[in-house]
Amino acid sequence: MSEGLYERARFRTAGDRGLLVEYGDAIDPVINRKVRAMAIALGKEPPEGVLEVIPTYRSLLILYDPLLTTSSRLEKDLLALEERLPEIQIPPPEMVEIPVCYGGEYGPDLESVAQSHGLSSEEVIRIHSEPTYQVYMIGFTPGFPFLGRLPEVLHTPRHKTPRTRVPAGSVGIANDQTGIYPIESPGGWQLIGRTPLKIFDPQRPNPFLLKAGDLVKFKPITPDEYRRLAEGDGD
Amino acid sequence: MEIFRVLEPGIYTTVQDRGRYGYQQFGIPISGAMDQFAYRVANLLVGNPEDAAVLEITVFGPRLEVLAEADIAVTGAEMPITINDEAAEGWTSLRVRPGDVVALKQVRSGCRAYLAVTGGIDVPVVMGSRSTYVGGKLGGYQGRPLAKGDLLARGPAEPLKAPRKLPPNFIPRYPSEILLRAIPGPQDDYFDEASGSSSARSSRSAPRPTAWDTGLRGRWSPIERGCPKASSRSPASREGSRSLPMASPSSSCWSRRWGATRR
Image 1 (cartoon, rainbow over the protein chains, first blue to last red):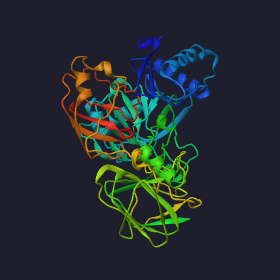
Image 2 (image 1 turned 120 degrees about the vertical axis):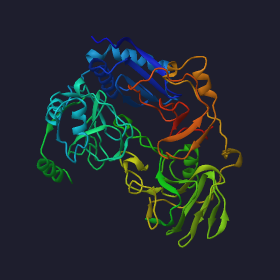
Image 3 (image 1 turned 180 degrees about the vertical axis):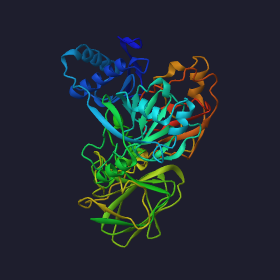
Image 4 (image 1 turned 45 degrees about the vertical axis):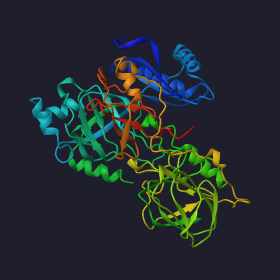
């Protein structure tokens, strides 16, 4: 069991057609697995009136049609579904390998991140690409994965002034999180590398490379490999 | 079928429909018409399904050359409408013919107007919607606001058999000061009961027009002792949520698509 996991789901009002369900109060794999299981269960057996389910680190936001259901009815539906979770088939998480070219033009902050922790760039690359990360949630921009947990030795604060343009594919660090920018956007994370894979491509049948609950492993590649893969993925 | 050539795009004119639902879990906002009432009425006035795509016109409108006979309707914010430089009315169907020039001018009250055309604006459906998400460069017309020279198409449709008009008593007013109804949100307990949340409920703001797509930013009366418990573990936020950033508790943001003009 996990310390931050609530014994009973907590329900909070999120406007006149939203219900927020909290399962805990921490960035924690156990809490997040509960969120994922409930999101999948809700996708399989949506209670009447549910329009959209948005999982985050520790909670689910459920948007509903107030003409079809009420928040009190939804609370009952959700508690009943939670009881039946053991009977519902929750598929195992998918493992996705993400090739990353660290440092240089692809990771302009790699050296300063290394320096701030008294590490070499090579050590940062090794430590960052060693763990299997969990996709805790997707958000901020289309398909942006929030990954945890980042090894503590790499925890680095955001830039005080965000960059106005972070290239798509950039791999960044912010405090105890790491993530990948799917599209060019402003951003304040420390950029240590870049992947040639398209994290988000609206033209693909499934536009999103990652979904909440997936497992991610980074694989260091060379600039040559980056260019080759970028051309291969450029359709 | 081509229906409009964009002679002047206006300040910020985009294709929008009901919105893109089901993808917020992947970080895709709903987008869609801000003023859903005006949007739906515009479609009904030209005989479209309520969820057809329209032009959402912000503050200063476009000039459009008509390329085929059609019915159009303009609803929402009060913007002077002309057809071939002759004044025309909003909230009613208008028959236009090839060569006509439809123009919308500087807004008089409100912010966004909606122009619907029989058959709906025909752009590719991306992830279930024709709405433009400018930040993600997707949906709508090439994922961006209209530009001079763009050619817009419409779907197949029959012209109206008789003109349609919304009874005047149903036309919303768009005053410069609006009252936003709100109920306490999921993180209401982060605020000091006595001061924080009550002042959050009663403050006034002049929105700064900085974030068209994601929200209204504004300076509000300061919220004393607000936000004592910062959390990086943000829950998903709904459209219409008012959020108070930690760095400057006197500014805050209402997310896009608050239904302030909906009755």
